[in-house]
Amino acid sequence: MAAKRFLGGVLLGGAIGAVLGLLFAPSEGSETRGKISEAAKSAGHKIEGVAEQVKEKLHKGEDIKQSV
Image 1 (tube, rainbow, N blue to C red):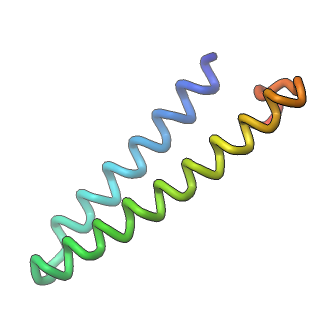
Image 2 (cartoon, one colour):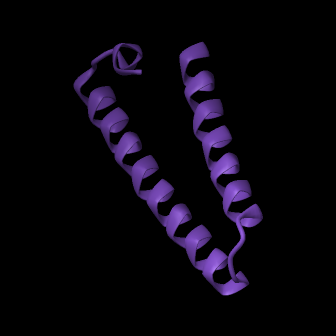
């Protein structure tokens, strides 16, 4: 359980850091919004992949702590 919370915190912190970095970077607003949109899509795809792996491991009865 602690590993799950830690991983969630790392992912959330990384996402917040990426968004803040883009917001404070010197570029046009439309360009920044596009970067944020792409970063959000990429993060969503990564999360979907991890969720699918966890689902498969749970379905097989494997311990998900080993993969975290």
